[in-house]
Image (cartoon, rainbow, N blue to C red):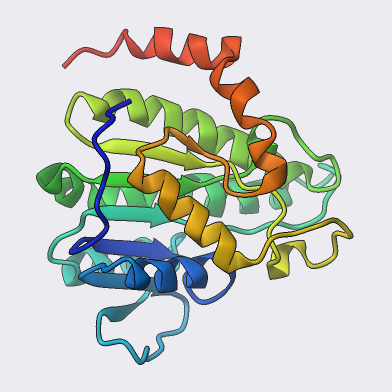
Amino acid sequence: MNNQKIDITGKVILVTGANRGIGNALVEEALKRGAKLVYAGVRRPFTHPDPRVMSLTLDVTNPEQIRQAVEKVESLDILINNAGVAYYDDLSDRAVIEQHLAVNLFGTHDMIQAFLPLLLHSRGTIVNNLSMLSLAPLPPIASYSISKAAALSMTQSMRAYLAVKGVTVQAILTGPVDTDMNRGLDIPKIPTEVAAQNIFDGIELKQEEIFPDPLSKSLAEGWFNSSSKALERQNAASVSA
């Protein structure tokens, strides 16, 4: 991991799923930290009171909308893949699994591939908002857990491939945050604003995995010292410049 910190001041940032929850909080936190321009990827365009925010109509499962977004973004320093879906299921319906994969895995993949030329030019940063369920599933949201585990594996592989090209790739292993997605869970949750602050702290420190809330953070030390993390580093060495 590169120890040189990232300064958000003056950066151009794109956040998907920016209409509510963590995505909306990430837009506001980027502004507080002095971002030059924040592209907010949303399904329905909106006007933000801060002129530094530009709304992009962007469904990450829609190739044409991704293509149009690329045409509007002239430069990019940080891509935050935050858009996601989560539904209760028991794995009995393949269509539900495919729906989760379409957004949480392939949507993230397609966004990275589309904006990679800009990120290579800026030697920028890719941040994928995953979940602590990437590490162990929660059966009541099994398809979601599967999609996030796959997205973590993709993130780790992209980290190895892109590190030699100067692009940083980070994963957010989110726990309970007070969002619409978690509203039905009767567990302690942190506000989205706090999660966004902790996420940007992790981005600035170039942490490979960011644990933004108390529950996920309790896993951090064990994760960084785990045999799984050691194996990731070992396997990454197979990628040459």
